Figure 1: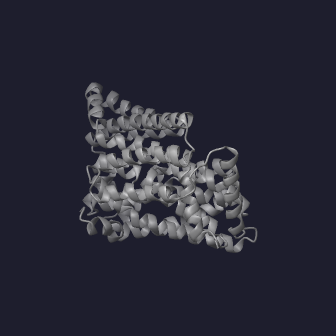
Figure 2 (figure 1 turned 135 degrees about the vertical axis):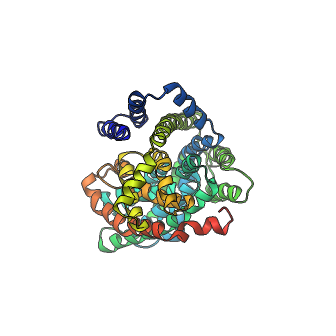
Figure 3 (figure 1 turned 60 degrees about the vertical axis):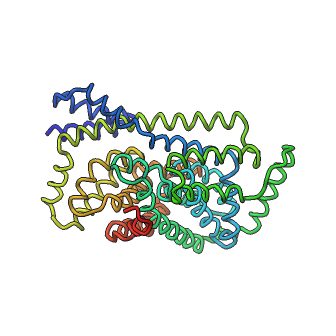
Length: 439
């Protein structure tokens, strides 16, 4: 009964718009008030759990993403992708998807990926004849690749809360992420084939390059134009992690150390004000996430003390003992959770609650990392809440009603097939962690 009251408090506070960390604390406070728990001990527990060097990775990757956005690195990555896949009808949508995957290989954040790649690609997509609704839906779904292509902020949080290997969790989402790249591109090409307004991008590439060249000459700065420094960034970061040279936290620091000089000295896009804004943005994001982590650790501890995982497992097995049916219900639960809150909040709340449930029916924690990543990603673009879909709409200037059709097509023909395969084919998420010896 106590847990039910706490869940109702959590749901009510989220629905009325209370900030997520405060909603978590309100739910925890209801358990303390009714259950007689000592708040001071819970505060100590929350502090000890968040006192982790691994969590430094989050603000560092956020800072790296901001520097890439302002420093011209993201634009150069896009330019390189355009040369390979942009010169055909619908090719610019494929460029957007692939660019999100490449940017996600450094930033680790879905919102940073949507903001950076979206701000660069939206004008090009509009000039290419793409309708606003398709632009917003495509950028929103492709932006989720930032939390599936490693390094992933979501997998860092999952590994921290579950005690699993960070690198194994990174690898678990690679194949699902690459599958989504292919399926998003296919849906985009289908729309492009049917829409006569969408044009081939060849001439637009030349125009964009000419405009950029004129801008550099006008500013009096001889900026570097080669994409090689930008392309080396994900290679260096991922190579250092999987080569065993650096931990995830050290690699995040390296991404900042690399991006700042490249943006200042080579591409000449970063000055003192831009760097200050990036530092402030990273600090604000880190503060929000740390407050949220502190709150959810207290709430998770109380839920565990009240045997919420056992209650969920008992409830699910009372409906069916078939693992296939149980995983359908677990997936539905995670989708609803992801629709109510942002990806980080949903992950750190779902991991301690659902991990005991899925391991009880034989699901590996690393396999569950892949399932959770795809689930939370899909939930963030699924109406009615769909925080990333609305972010894509704000960046593209699209109305929600115009995005619903393309968004539904991406969910049905890309997200759902990937989720089903990831859930019921363990090798899909486990192949790379096993191949490289992390499990």
